Length: 114
Length: 143
Image 1 (spheres, helix red, strand yellow):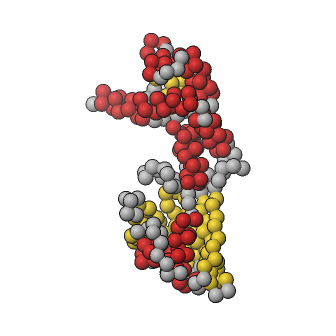
Image 2 (cartoon, one colour):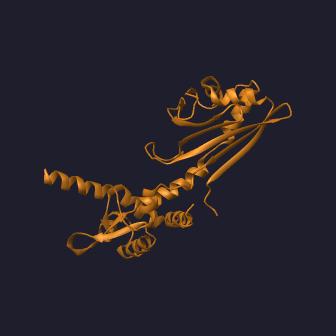
Image 3 (cartoon, chains in turn yellow, red):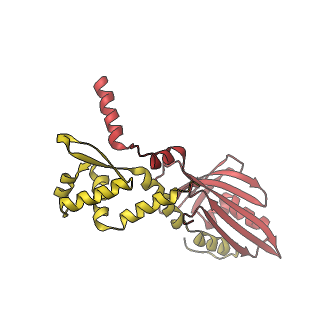
């Protein structure tokens, strides 16, 4: 396992722990690339606060900055780190207890609701 | 290391390995405790599928068949999109234990990263819908 997978997942979870950053990431996921000004128009957050969080997210590699119209910086969500975090959640969401309990019940001749 | 790559459970059951083997590797067995319906082509490379009344399906590819000791298959990672290529490997090992069986299930591969995801996660380049849409526009413009 590459040693930095966990670091990537950690950055995603750190980003998602903050409600403002969640709102920004959700807006970029839902509507596509946007400038800080676009986001300020859509979210109940000041442009300054949004710019600060976008800078932090860009530093962490969760969004990327690119030239937009009228020389404004546009931010785009990077999906690859999210896909790494999804794998982490996939492991936590895997439930073997229920099927193994059902297997035991089946072998013992008991019927279990599934 | 906090990233879970491997999940392992061991249970003791009262039945001998041959009985447990049938529950794990036949359509009749799997549909009795795991899926609501099941099909299985029990040979390495064979396909198996389980469905649930809620509409979920699990497509498996049989990898190891060593009756009645080892049964292994790969399937897609729970919670990821259906078309995501990442898969985990599940292996059941059956060991006789007194009159019954010690059954171990190990699922590995949660921390794997295919090359393209690895590259995208770490190299700072961006790919995505927007750039693909840009390519579509360029393609249409060129036509």
